[in-house]
Length: 70
Image 1: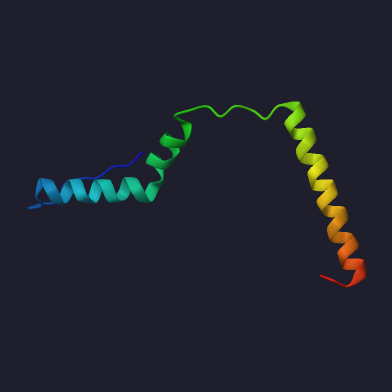
Image 2: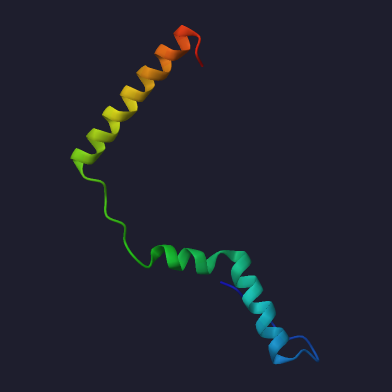
């Protein structure tokens, strides 16, 4: 929670500026925007395809490394 106390002789605009600056620095707004929508989980088929792609790419990189092309 962000808390800002008005200093003596401080204008409302300056107080608002300090408050918004503290909110940005704390990451509260970023977290709220992130939680606004719930992301759907990745389904089983897509995870499987992704894993197969990673394995294939890993094998290609290893092959290139053995050939000295990396």
